Length: 431
Image (cartoon, rainbow, N blue to C red):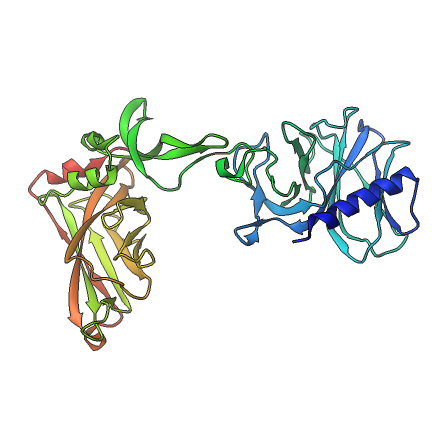
């Protein structure tokens, strides 16, 4: 990442060149406007370094006035957060940039009205590969008209309390938008870091991933019991329980607001007479004092027939893990969070059946799992707008050393039915 002094020097030298009406060792940028353009000012957004998030390149920005989610694109930091503008004269806005031995990956030019701080984009264009070591080189771009009838797109938004802006541009023949944003505040919303829900989305409101709470929500005009997740609001933090689409039997909403909702739900589903899957899980131990380890190459398979579902199923949309008390897409095998079972749908030709495969993620168990532990799978049923909450009993089977492991096999789980009518107690409402 370039230091701020270098970036500031670029902008300050540019301004100095403009004051003295030219520099011998400078690169000229000329932005022309078409005859029907109403742009009075042009502002340059000079991109220098790729935006980074958690060490990786940012893959998009959620701009002001969009849908509140990240729009895919290539994101660069500005060379300097201060505005760099030139008034249009004779159909041209001119800029000078001090020469040095480097290349600018992108420059976005935005044309605005008589108010230079306006966010209304009247025209835009993009220059790429501007070589600052080219001596007296001149780069020319022409503003493209931006409106609802054009195939291109441009956006400009500014921080609420100052003139610092972020911009994006997508040419009519481009798949992705290029963004040039303010370093330190890439969504230009002035929300403090500790209260940012998404640093790349303007005034973000985001639900936590997965389901983490139980509440009531509306489905088909009725208030029903559903899984939900807290919502994070930029500047305010995370709170509440926003209803999600996964419904539950109403009786399980007795756990709503409980001090430990997952434990409450598991207790409600721990009745021994509920229909459930029993899945043996083979483990081996190389030496007496070694950790028990999942046998390599073993998958667990569950085939659910019409006696339970009457129809085909869809991909499971959550698991409630008894080991962690968390909702998610995996079941944790032991105390190490990297050791998990994943579940995926494996379609069958017989649409009255449903086949699930459980695969191990993680190479070794760090502690002996309990002989039996119940987790819960939510399984949408295709065609009737309902779902099944299916308890899964993960049963440890200690086979001895590695040589005693069964090898690459798919080991079946057993569907154990409770008394007649019990399955009705674990049906959930629509998907």
